[in-house]
Length: 74
Image 1 (cartoon, rainbow, N blue to C red):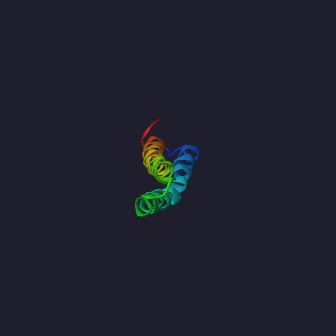
Image 2 (cartoon, rainbow, N blue to C red; image 1 turned 90 degrees about the horizontal axis):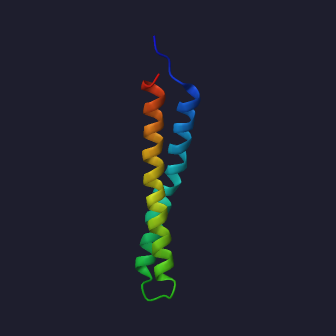
């Protein structure tokens, strides 16, 4: 009978918990950048927002992958 690897499961949950703030912060920064297109810091703020949103996607993918690995791998 298989058992869940609790350490790996906890690691996956930590990845998902780290992604939650980035899910909200990334789009907010992008929205702020688009509202201030005439400012000199438009491009750096936009790039930062895109990087934050990309990091959220990466952490979600990594978290789900780690949780599935904890549940189904031996």
